[in-house]
Image (tube, rainbow, N blue to C red; front, top):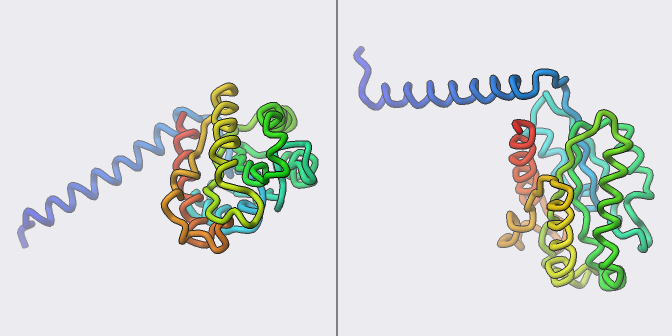
Length: 225
């Protein structure tokens, strides 16, 4: 039976897609010839990391060549002058012991609490110290990506979106720029999706998937750099 134009076009498109995937894998290996698998990804954060499905979703997206570890700590902060600074939690040491190749830091939501926000001027120095400690203690030296936390749609739980937008996020952006670290914009990805949060602060399954997808995209770009 002769091939129709539609079938021929479909075959050509499929061939192009397969060829593109093979080229990506080829160049990935050329750029990182010494990379060993599985690549370990440490998810550092607060309850938005600890208590949601995003790390599991990220594992599914990355596949068998990656191992994703969840090192989130509920109520934790970047700021050291609070009740629960992340750097002093056991999960910080566990993240280092995981020997991650990649570290995703998504902190800052709890720093937007009004009582903690009075110390916001200390945020950048505390964040840079957290990054520095992770870089020094983790061997081999990992790639670190900073994530802007998701929006806050319900201020009644403590952190306020105004504090997040006006004080926390600009400082995260400045830290990323000063340290020349990739920045993952989770906030923008969820800005129009209040329905993706079960309480206005913590993402539901749909929100977790958006976070994982955004982080996955940035990880792949980072690996290829």
